[in-house]
Image 1 (spheres, one colour):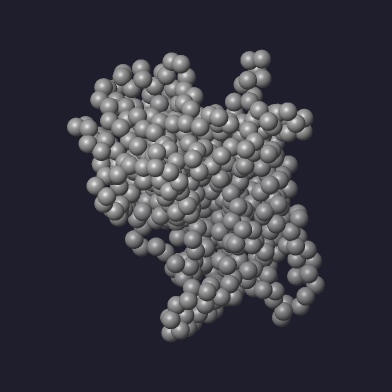
Image 2: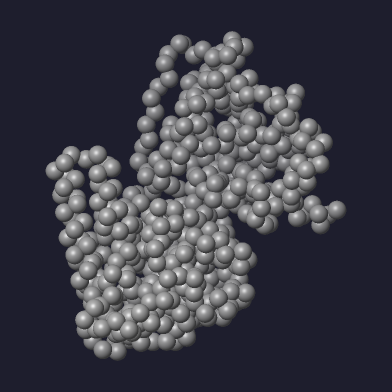
Length: 567
């Protein structure tokens, strides 16, 4: 079992004293660059909202009583092996092209089917549910080991909930964008009586749904000015938005005539009532995407309500986005799925085989979130090669796995953020950190931060720590990051600076030896010289109120419930 060394030295520590100062030739730190080869291939032909409008026009036909039907938006099936099926259930428009801007990237992970409900179609909600139910049953029998994803927006979300409630024995995963279960609390419920009273010459269909356009025309025009582009380019962009809005008006006139809109509102009402009445039967894993700028439905409040109603539910909020979330700029459903660890090909989550490395743009976005911390801390990385030479950077780290990096947690565990990014920057290596399970799940909502705060870490490949996951990562020849001291070491107390709190019998050594892994011990210094613990746990538990708060916080984590059972 070979061993090399990695040293992480914070520049903050260098500035305040000489005792940690290391010099390697006095040469300035080299600039590092990111190789695109380290990531999955990027989408090269992104679809625009105008592309959606042109495609939607072809889907709107004047035939009467056209049946609802499935269609595949891609010419070929998903490229990845064992790709699960994704059924897209449209919103009130029924066109089925709501994921059009996402099709290319989704097609690399899923076999995509989309439901099309023609404007003239008058299929009742129970019949739509049965249609989706029939497809789910047949596909589950055809591929019994694979899950089925139901992605629905507004009306489609209600269909997905109804199918999941009536079929709890099927392996379903629900992704619901602005569910119409909130229809009873929206202003839309007051629209049918008004439409019936107004004369036919005054058609309110278009004004009623105009705000469905992603971000709204006015918002998009303002965004062009904020970008600070040259005047000619800004004017051209605004002109294109005006043309788009005009095209959108024509399509809405064809899609939402008076009678059609009345039927759609009636359909939403029945869908909302059915879905809400059966929420207690839904056992499927659910991800709710709530728009904070949704002028059609009160989606933010609805997301919070459903989070409490559904047993396996997570919520992600998008405060600046509108009702048609998937059609808006900057929304990437694939990135959302990866960041929430919501992708699996089998019956159970496999953090090794189901992991898809971040693309170039995804990495830049993740790295940008933590860039301020990097600037403040100014970490310096030094490594030791097999011949004992200290080099600046990560050149001493073995390229071939399995490799197990084992080190100490600095205060507040900021090292778990900087290390994975640096490995991608310098070596194009996806480092897989083993982290506390509370970054993935909660026993209940409460005082702990929402798990969405750890989406960046999950996107970069973090895995809940367990013996099984360590075994699987080693067998996959991964580069693994392990902090044996865990959260106790990260939240060390007064007088415990640079103190290792590792278990007496570190089992990771036996596991690494089994797979012939290279163990890379490393140390992190600097933070404990810059930051001082003033009040620690021993001081806090002496205050009765704080002691009770700490007990509640402990009970919220995944370990708290098991401790109570043992006791």
